[in-house]
Length: 308
Image 1 (spheres, helix red, strand yellow):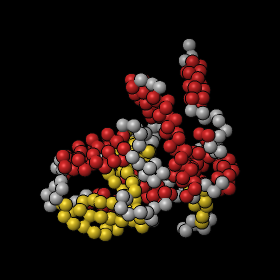
Image 2: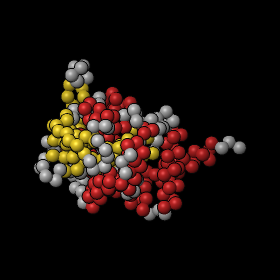
Image 3: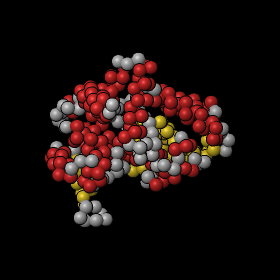
Image 4: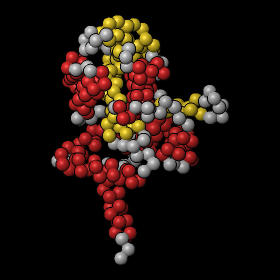
């Protein structure tokens, strides 16, 4: 007996349940004036420093004509802008406007809340089962990108505990920084968890193949209006060299610009050469340094800043 008809019926049944549950058939996705396709375009532009229509069409597997009409609508709404490429006058660079970035962030938060609501209806065991099943589906359908594509997402329940645990473990193993360092991280995490303004502050998690491999935060400076602080950049040892750190710093920069900050500052240690290299390539400049006796011997603390 041919097993394909039964498999086809199961997959089509899943598609019906999935599109209904997530409201993918709604003309106005997530209660906005945008379609699902338009929201996907905003997502891609929000996670790229810049892009072209050709790259978007390939990434989203869309007909170029259909994509062109969507981009026209997004430009008329003031969400997307088009500029000439400095390297090829025939090419146009697409990017989000400040309004577009704020709209994407609003929709992204709403999508996260919607999915969180669906997951809360499941028991912990069923949640884990669902995540494993969906990860398996993705690996089967996209075997070439599984485990290689860096995905940066907003934090969700459970991530802040992971950020604290991994900072403590990684820095203790690699640098011998013990409880005093972990206490500093715990305070940063607690302050963010207790009260942060999602319009101007955020925490992101980097994933590879569905596994958490990095983190970063951007928060308002408590004493300098208009200045943001980049905090708690971490890349797991097995994920280094894959662009995780750059992706996390880049998302901070884009968010800070969209939120209206004029400068981003950060505090690091001179021995953290890999992180310092990422900051330098992103345009940060070291502005001061001094001894740090808080959690290690002979450490030199540095302050770096980026003008936006």
